[in-house]
Length: 110
Image (tube, rainbow, N blue to C red):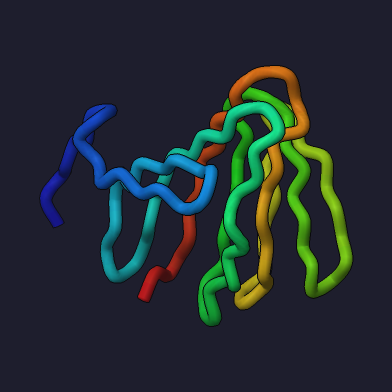
């Protein structure tokens, strides 16, 4: 595989409900996305990825990650990460007073 640089604004923009995301990379093995939510905004339910682990890392802000299948709520602050099991439904809510920025990665991405 050839080395590739993707600069901010060059990715694919995706709007899902109140969440704005930029997909930087998408291959058959990996997806990497940066997402933003304004205070009080909620992301759409992600039904999970059947055969893939998913990680969310909070770059800035404060979110609550809800895993409705397990009835779990996790408060995540800047610098925190959560590993989401394959097939686990989830969504995040910005519960802070400033814009939240999160990095998402999922592998393998089929």
